[in-house]
Length: 194
Image 1 (cartoon, rainbow, N blue to C red):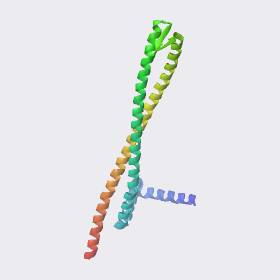
Image 2: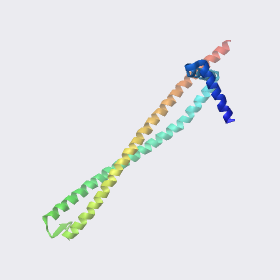
Image 3: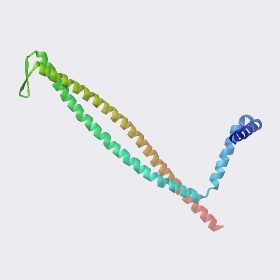
Image 4: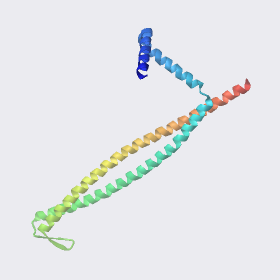
């Protein structure tokens, strides 16, 4: 069955190629376009109107859903940004503490006083090493958060563009509905007068 269909299509293509030559595609395209127009013109205006209203009805919930998602994403991005700002402030404080402790160790004292407590140079070195590792981990974490914010902002831009396109499509459908209603009214007037 499939083989026979392929042979028939091939034979038709060969025949069209022999008859029309290089213009075969142009003739076929014109024929398809004319057939589409004929079918489209034979569809009643009432049906087209109903179809357009259904499309608007289906677009509205999707637009609302996307608006909700965009708002939710905007809140999430703002939270991430405030979290990044807070963590960067903490990193600045931690860096300052590390620099102060490093400067103190360079003095070469055997004991150091921090917060009313006395510490040996070994204790300060150990604490400094631990703080530096924590600082590096937090710095990497903040970098990853910034990358996440950037990715989510790009997604947000795409979602806003999609929403704009959907709203534009809905507005275009509304215009088409108005035009079809006008055409339908004119057809009814013409029918009444005849």
